[in-house]
Structures are given as structure tokens and as C-alpha cells.
Figure (cartoon, one colour):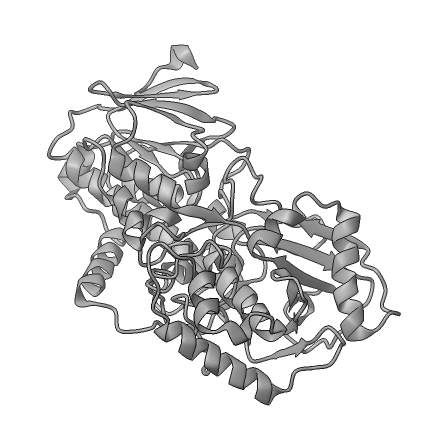
Length: 488
């Protein structure tokens, strides 16, 4: 689902500067990264090949996965004379970007926000595709304790300032989790509900990982675009459907094996076999961790170690609809500080930007996984206990609910990737080196600076497409990818 499902009142580079209530990177982006971004944007906006060369290079590449990284790569390849074939296991495009409109409102099960819209490539895509956005005001929030009392703005601001200061200066190590280091240094916050709420609704939401598994060393070394976050109000699928236009996509085609032991790569699917000189693998990290795809020969140690070391976080979303609202219509967010970490402690007021009497709440960390074994009735009951503490026992029950179960989702096995204790952030970079210039990897788990984000996934697709374009014209023979139709 990618962590753009959360807004960056959270930790933008895992440390949020909330004074301005906007997404601000921790420090200046290096000149190397600036030049890299300039190169990616420049090359994605025009054809890499000369007109004559482009006419000579109308060939195919097999891309596994029709999420935004796969679609990004497919579009870039097609601009440059290729005819990519995209194999998608699901019945739809978009991957973890999935929109449900069954209740009359666009419920994005995966990403909801564009983080840092200034110069963000997703902003341009939103404009082109007809996706509508709304700027969410992170300062428009009220937070309540378990007795229904409201935390004063002064107390909230002081706690958040302290939180930001601590996270900005916290020094961890590879072998200990964030929670181990944090509570060892600040034991006074162990049983404070407000601090449990911040570590959950801010840090766990942003990173996707439970703080008892999150690395204390590299939790905060990603980058961010500038600008106030915006939420897509009419569905993220507007963007993925836009990118899927004119691309050859084979739905309901699950890849189960990749054999790159010979000159050409053999891709075994549930619908037959494909062969190619090049394959771009964009499936989520969780799918790689579950060994859904068997690689022959086994993946190089560097890549396999990265798969083993990194992990998939789980953040689940719950949309509840009522006949009428009982909360403040102009309030953007509602916070609650329960005893249990990660338990329905954060509510987004959908009524603020859509014609729906709805709230969306979340479950974070390990509690998010626990919710997947709960019935709808149990979920509603637990959520209502929190809302009744705030608004009283007479509030009505919701008439409808939609929910996600990302941890058990067989197409992702989690929401988005994070750095665990025992891993290092450079593990994300292990995927950037292709295997024998035949097997390439893209996805939010393959881009260090923008990991776990929609724009990160998109940029990784451009990165790998440009590598394929470069390598093809120096190494690969003509007509190098073909489909074995008799095996389909």
C-alpha cells in the first residue's frame, strides 16, 4: 500500500518538523542526489534515442507487476521504441494503489496522499490524469485522552517539539530496535499515553514498521519533496489507469518462476511461458520474501541478503460511514491516546473534502496485524469504544465499513518496506545492480531516498527503464524478447 497512505504530520524523513505542519527534509539534499533527480526527470520527459535509432529499436521487455513502478518503466520504455509486455497477477492494474468506490466515496486502500507535492512527479501525473487533490491541514486536529478530556494545544505542541528534538538527535545502532534505544534513554515516556500515541501515529505510520522492530540506526535517512501534503479525493487509480493506457498488460497472469541461467530469460506464469533477454521485476518486497517467484539460479547474495534483512510493515485502514455526522465537520483530524499502541488512535474526517459522512481510522505496528484476525463486528466495537469516550455513549453505530488486510494480502504481504534492526539502509540499494544485465528490479523497496512512497516507486521504474534502454543498445541483439504463444 505504500506509506503515502499516511500524511506527513508523521515523520517525513522519519523525523517530522511539525512546527510548520509541512513535510520538510532533515537536511540539504546532496549535489549527487540533485543531479540524479535532474537526470531522471530530464530523461523521462523526452526520448532517450534519436528518431532514427528509435525506429530501429521497437522491441519488447517483460515487466513483472503493473504497480506504479512497472507502469512507469513501461511508459518510459515505450517512449523509446520498446513494446514492453507487463505481466500482472491481479485482475486490475495499480498494485497496492487500489480504490474502492462501493460506498459512494473513493476509499484508497493503499496510498492516499502525495507527500511534498512541489516538483513531485506524482503531482504532474495527478494533474494529467484528472485526479483531484485537497491540501490536508495537519494543525487542524484535536487529541483526546481515555477519559474523553482534550489535550490542550499548548501540551500537544510542547510534546511534539520534544518528540522532534529527540528523534532528530537519537543515536542508535544496527543491532537494537528503535524502541530499545528510545526507552532506555527516555524511560519516563514508557507508560505515557501521549508519547505512545506519537510514536505510533507519527513514526509507525510513516515507516510502516513496529517500533520494536524498526532500526534505531537508519530510521530517518530518507529524503522528501517540499510542500504541504495533499490527499487525492477521487481515487489514486486515476493515476494508474492513466499510466496503463496503450500498454500491453496481461492481467491474471501470476509469475511463479524466472530462469536466467541461459542467454534468454525464461518467465514461467500461470498462463504459460514467456522468454526475453531482459526482465524487470517490480513485485513488492513481501512477495520476494515469501519466495512466490522461484529464481534459477538463486539470486546473488547481495540481493538475497537485502530481501532477508528488510521487512514489510503493516498499516491497515478502516472507512466507517454514518447516516449523519456527530463530530465537528470542519475538524480535519481526531486523535485518541489509548493504552494499546497502534489501536485506532487516529481519525481522518472524510467529510472535510468529500460528500460523505465518514471517518477513516488506522491500525499501526503489530496491532495492525492483530486486526486482520478480527471480525468486522469486533473492529466496529473497538472503534466505537474510542469514539464514545470522546463524543459520548449516545452516538450511533456506523452503517457501513470497509477495511484492509495488508499483511495477509497475497499480492504484497504487507503495506510498505522498512529498515529493521539488523539491517541497514544501504540494503535498499542492493536492488539497483542488475543481474548479468538480464534481471532488473524496481519498486518502493529499491530506492533508498524515497523508499515506501508512491513517488519513490515511480522514480525507481524510470531509473530501471533508462538502464535497460542504455544496456540494450550496447549489448542486446535485435528482436531480443519474444513470447512463446504455444505455451500460453
